[in-house]
Image 1: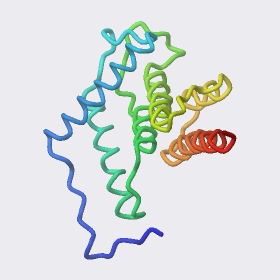
Image 2: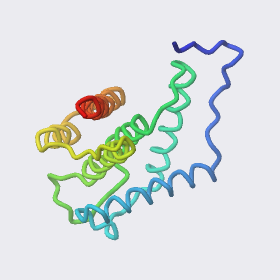
Image 3: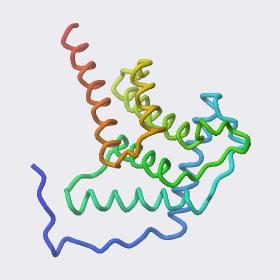
Length: 176
């Protein structure tokens, strides 16, 4: 059972220092670059990055981490963090790819790849590598591209997909 924090336990939010934000931003960029090279679908060398917006993405996710802890006693996991990064990338659009087709936003592609990449990594930790079926991938891509998704809906979607993966592992273990 989660317990609420008492008033004396609450520490006002202080933004992380510049060095920490830079380190977090660089780590995020490294993840995106690795992902772009592994999929081969994004020419990462041509991607322009609005550094100010990307720093905001990192700061907003850090604020959410504190928010979930203070108000709900929840320490966010990798799945929640990935969903929050996707949300803020879709909102702030820190990436631009000159000459990229207008009907395909590079931020949608990056968020989509990051979303399923995080699920794949977590699935590997369970011993069940995750590859979405075509219908799930199509629906998530469509939602990322055409709908105004809330942070909570992205977190719930990621957790639901991951729960189904965990359930599949449990079923697989029972049938042995």
